Image 1 (cartoon, rainbow, N blue to C red):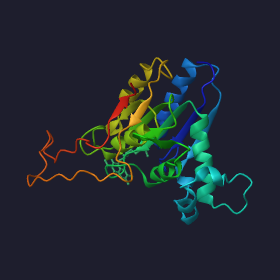
Image 2: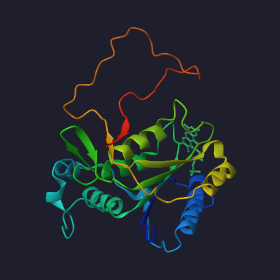
Image 3: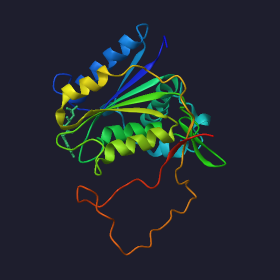
Length: 246
Ligand SMILES: Cc1cc2nc3c(=O)[nH]c(=O)nc-3n(C[C@H](O)[C@H](O)[C@H](O)COP(=O)(O)O)c2cc1C
């Protein structure tokens, strides 16, 4: 691939010197640049600068394409930035997200970015069988850093949640760069092994998610959740499966 466009989404409030995720994202970008030397198009999105969803957003989100805020001087900041952030995703080939784990999940500002980007007819839609991602064929790299927790463990709700959202948007190729317990060296070794920006045949994915009308199945079981190997209630995901389209 010669001209991949990359959007880099940062959510650490710390600067380039202090932030583990920013340092590792930088190394990842250097590696991606080596794999694609003509690649010059990088967009940076700082989540800390994003607003929360506001009233106007909630009113326009049901039919967003009718409300393109370009040139609209009265559009709210949330609605304008939602449009911009979605546009960045639509125009990009690769999405790189820096994610410090905060309290077993993602930072609040990254959640704001997700709220602004999860817009029907922009990043996902519905067909007769349920939600359908509109960002097919793109790849995502999640640089996830923690203090003590293992990335991907039962109580890492952050990585699991991000995978879930990216799958809803139709992104099948998700690489997690593991910077658990601040182990930057190990993450750099993982980056060194990356050989391709975007796998040549990105399969279509469908997110099997409950639709808004769907009544979630209740678990009629008086037994507590089984415990996993860490002695915590099992939180194996039961509500989402990403499957290649047949
Ligand atoms: C508010 C806050 C909450 C945190 N919660 C967790 C946590 O639940 N589990 C964990 O392993 N580390 C936790 N950490 C540690 C960070 O994930 C870790 O320091 C990470 O490297 C921060 O990324 P950054 O250096 O890019 O800012 C927390 C740090 C902060 C500031």
